[in-house]
Image (cartoon, rainbow, N blue to C red):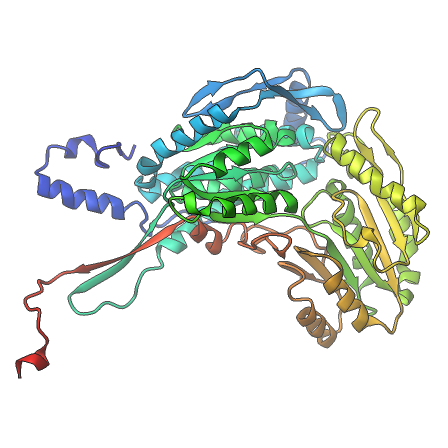
Length: 574
């Protein structure tokens, strides 16, 4: 234990020291809240052994069956205490919506304000906790997730978000572990950024303080890991957080919250507060102590939050930091020199894994006519052969979409394609919500370069293909640049280096993550920091030096080590 308390961050045995010594050690404790300590070596977490017959797969399936046999009761947790209200909600299994995976209740404005007060009460003590103790919580959480909780979080994500075994493992296990470990690494790197120049008799340094106030974290459904990162990064940097988990990812979010409690996260540092979106947003934004918003979700929601913060700007104690990753309309652009086998396989994976519900999923494809003639059969047949079914089935390639609202939205776009004269459905086009929210992977060919399927975010397993004249490469590059308001991910398939360089230069602002001869999905923590700009967010890059710095308020300290003996300058004495 660090022994930090609200009055004085020193171990109990040191409290009998003389006042002058106490003052010196108290200053030392504040400095030690963000030192450059050495941490264990960090590497990407290996994926689990999910081969048929493996012991771990058997363990996962037991957890899945256990979750199927009951409905979890998930509380609101504020300052370590559990609360429940009469506004009860349920989380359904998307591929079997007759089963209620979890039951939870919404906090009203009173409980949300209570969560904010808990943040404010815990903030100073947590901020002054030495970095090595804060880091140890998250390093221990990563180890717990890699061991004791591994099968549990995997089963929770498989059922709660209808992710297949592979997709759930990449997300809920490997990426979440990487989030926690690499964020500790980047925090250490930040703390080591200290002034290198000092005038004679002067010691300069930077104290990387947490923000003054509280952070509001708002999570999406599609990645368990993102939910853990949105509140985990601010908390590691000495901030306290009120966390709104997504209704349709409630179970996995609560498993992660329990894991961090077991890892030693003090009560009140993160408060787990399910709530209605507008109620939560309005309550936190109207509080003068709001220091930041950590958000992943839709572009319209983030714009609303930003507008409301702006309209309240004169009321805040400090300017709130707004960090958001929002929508995307990600592209695959194919050049005649592309490796066509890679194009087909990469596009199927990007467009249809997790039913196109990754932020980075390919939803529009631009192909020259001569190339389309070569790849269309393989692309169509490969898509038609994908198995759609229960997420826990080891043969399933992709499962249901997240809920009824998503199902109906995607259905509307498919129905549009069926009725529009410029569109032709080449694969899929069917949907069925009788048991689960199933939409078959769908390929739409359009002759309209301005078709709404090419510029509106669908967030489902719908890929729209536009075939262009072989001589119109430059015009098509410009079309890719201007068709969508988003700027998240994109892929250029091209083996001509000069063309690739020129195209990249023209498309440099279309994507925060751009891929050469690879699919537009699959960024790896510590290798390709993720985030986009334009209408896709603030591009602060999840798990990066840039993001950890976002959740700090640096204080420059100048300490003069020798007395100042004069108030005149030498030339005055001549």
